[in-house]
Length: 115
Image (cartoon, rainbow, N blue to C red; front, side, top):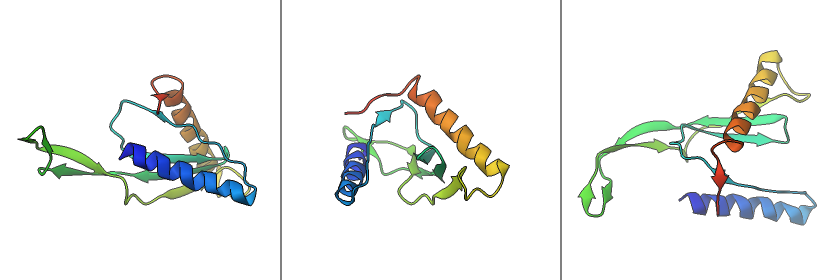
């Protein structure tokens, strides 16, 4: 699933080049169960969506039924914050800055190249 998602995002962003938009995408993975999705755009915007945790008793691995918890990310609603000209207040701008620091802390420590 992760590979399909990365290829879909890459394809969508690459298609913007036809309209003269400069796009680059680098993907890394972290060895953590995700609890949210965070998109940082142009250093001034953050989109965040929280995953819902559900019990999954239908899972199987090598013929063995498993009872586990799963996260629902595809339906997560995204909330927008900005630190640019459209910012509502200092708290919103601080949220974007803190989100960037959180992202950078993962990227620069435990994230590994995603192929």
